Length: 139
View 1 (cartoon, rainbow, N blue to C red):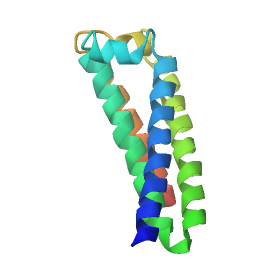
View 2 (cartoon, rainbow, N blue to C red):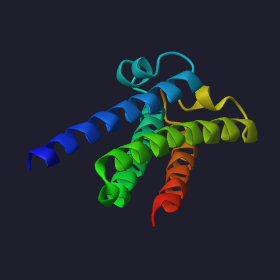
View 3 (cartoon, one colour):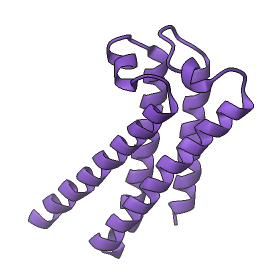
View 4 (cartoon, one colour):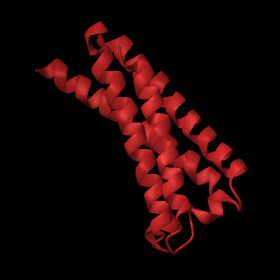
C-alpha cells in the first residue's frame, strides 16, 4: 500500500506540473494575466477555455498512467511526462492555428469579460486535440 501511495503522490505531482504548464501556455497566448481575467474580471469565456484545457490535460495524463502502469512505474511516469508535455504543445499549436483561421485575435476574444462563442470553439479544439492524443496512446 505504501508503494501505491508513493505512486499516487508522484503521478499527482507530475499532473499538477502539467496543468500548470498548460495554464502558462494559455496565459502566454492570451493578452493580460489569465488569472486576473478569470478571478477578478470574471471572464466566463476565459474560464471555459481554461477549464477545457484542464480537462484535456487530465484526460491525457489519466490515459498515459492507465495504459502504461503495468510496464513499471518509471516507464509509466516517463510516458506521462512526455505525452503530457506533447499535449500542452499540441493544444497551444491548435490555439495558434485556430487564431490564424478565424477572424479577430482569438486570445482577445476568449478573454472578453462577456461570453464569446469563440471560447466554445477553442475549448472544443483543445478537447479534440486531447482525444486524438488519447487515441494514439490507447493500446
